[in-house]
Length: 424
Image 1 (cartoon, rainbow, N blue to C red):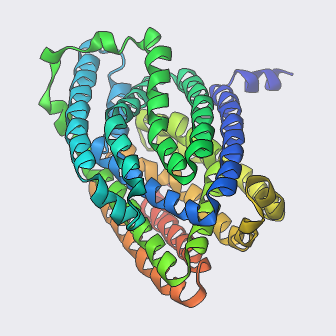
Image 2 (cartoon, rainbow, N blue to C red):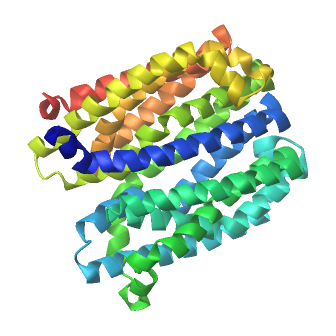
């Protein structure tokens, strides 16, 4: 009885329970969204959605200068120092808005060029980039808000805000897809950050009083210098990885077919659904814990807590997912997507090693290990690109998943060797 009570009072359990509720809602939303996409845009449309997501992912990296991880770290370290906290928030906010304004002008001006680059010669998608240009400032502000809330350890506030924004985003997404089909699906991707910003603006600041901390006189370029270390670490990967994924998908479309490229996006979406719980828990709990770890023993404790909790959960759920793969496909998509069942085994292997290496990879960010992180990220992305191209020529669509699984295995193996003294 005392043990049960102790578990219920445990911070990780409380966060996990609330996070689980959020994940269930997000998974439900993902099921509805996937089904609507399958019916209204098909496998070919899913491939275009994958291309656009790669572009917006790279754009987020540029527009936020890959600062979020650094913001979480420095806000967490200075949460009890009002002056420093005000300086950080003011500097980052003004920097984000200035950069977003420049990028918005460029995207709006070159919307036709971008449409051709991402979607081919059909200029009906130009409107998507123009809308993206308009909403970009809201996107970077939502990233800033989430980073600050995370850094202050307001996990429950963050999760509640995410739940509300996901529900509202679902309503908007379904409406846009019904009205405009593939164009609507693409527009919904651009609008999700606006929904998240709106929710966090009205829901969270009542406690954090972020706007009350803004003081132009407190703008300090030294804050940018500190965060630049994280930018230098993360930005290359945030730009290179989506670009290479985009190029791999284009190669897949040309050499295998548009539908098969859509199948890859479909299995990726399924993977994102069942990984939501783990990735959210790492970002809102384990990463801040790594930042606060003061020595090797505390860091080791965080690692072991992660592996004892997360890995058994994934292995069990992964086995269930594999045997229910046809059932999952029929719920999420249409019969057109049943060939995706052949991709599950490689995706699960890929995700297993990705999770194993996830917490070790976050250690690079938490302790600001710049050079090894950059080298490993660059080498792994380049390896993935060339192996994917090679295997696509041999085995088609499965070649991409095989290459990703091999890349994640090697990445984890290198991390184990690099952090062997801390782990063992």
